[in-house]
Image 1 (tube, helix red, strand yellow):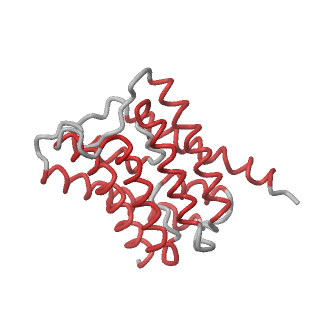
Image 2 (cartoon, rainbow, N blue to C red):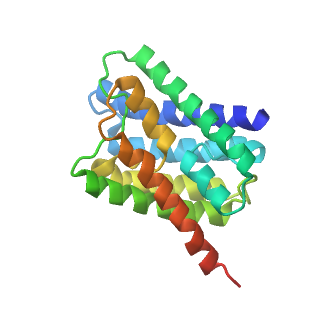
Length: 213
């Protein structure tokens, strides 16, 4: 239960701070800026890895949990409870933001700026490289080294910085499903439920091949 609570709290903090930055940027007329939103996502991910890494592995992302399971680095019996904890935490965060900013229409939901295919491919690629970094600096249950959080948080900020205006740079089904459900904008949700999982899972055989001694 400690692991599941850590995943719930961590995903809550991730969605509250990350999508909260989007909501407050709209609320304040652009005070946060796109760069500020990307940095917020990167910093909250980095901070949470150092906070909960030793407890739960600091996944906060169903796609990451699934990929670790495929890699054999995470017990399959914990997969469903992890995903449930992550989704509950994300939904609670979006519910909190809805309570605080009831006039906001999207609550930081990820939406394609162009075509669905463009955002789908972008999300697959983004999550592929994010997972490559994660799998190389983490074990699935314990983060390795002092720089794991810095490396992962930096990749999240980098990818959000350049890809956010195109696809929202979700890379995380829980991060996308919560604001979509709470705001009612589920028309493009399929992209952000499928593409990150595909990207993360595809990264595993590539990682195994590269690291095959």
